[in-house]
Amino acid sequence: MIRAVLLSASCFALAIPAAAQTAARVDAANRAALREPTRAGYISAVQVYPWSEGTLYRLYAAPERVTDIALQPGETITSVAAGDTVRWTVGDTSSGSGQGKRTHILVKPFSAGLRTNLLITTDRRVYHIELESRLSGAMAALSWTYPQDELIALRHDREAAEAAMPVASGLAVANLNFNYAISGDKPAWRPLRAFDDGRANLHRVFAEHRRR
Image 1: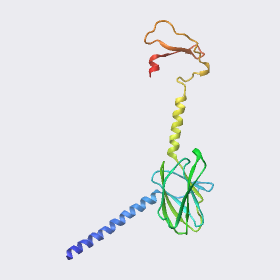
Image 2: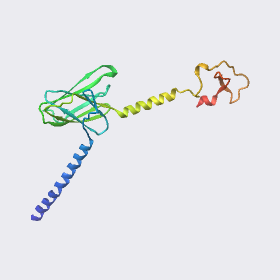
Image 3: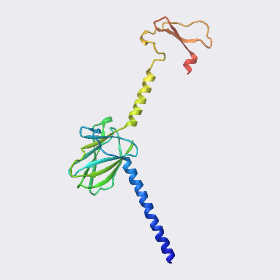
Image 4: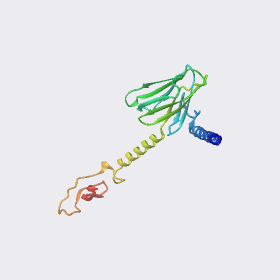
């Protein structure tokens, strides 16, 4: 019986450092993922964070002050969850209409010295927000830029520009002359049409090229 008690006590003593190490790792990961507001990040009174997966965003609030969390235009909320719904008020509204319609999450603490988290899921992404209330210095609003979306838009613009380029560079469409008739035998390599570009250059389009 004594041996069993000593063994249990030893296991418990070993479990405490292990749990402390796990908690330390979690705290370190959260600190590394946390983005604080910066002077360069402000546009007027709005703190603009660059959105990235797994990042925690700090929001400073104050009693009797409402802070606006503005989502991307066209983004639709799936759910909103706060860790403390007793001492924090969380609501939502919208602005604009059509494709420019924008959802806003509104938060307000009941007192200073409170900390909790806010999780917002949408049809496009997830936002992890760390809420902290102070006596003063509340953030008026925060929003995000979306670097990944901007890269995708740039790629689409580049692809559209490449698709709009002429088949042969140096040909002015306004100068093309299609006033040609093709006659004679019909071999496999017979051209489908002929034209010139105003400089006495004859260009032929073959059936093989049409099939590609």
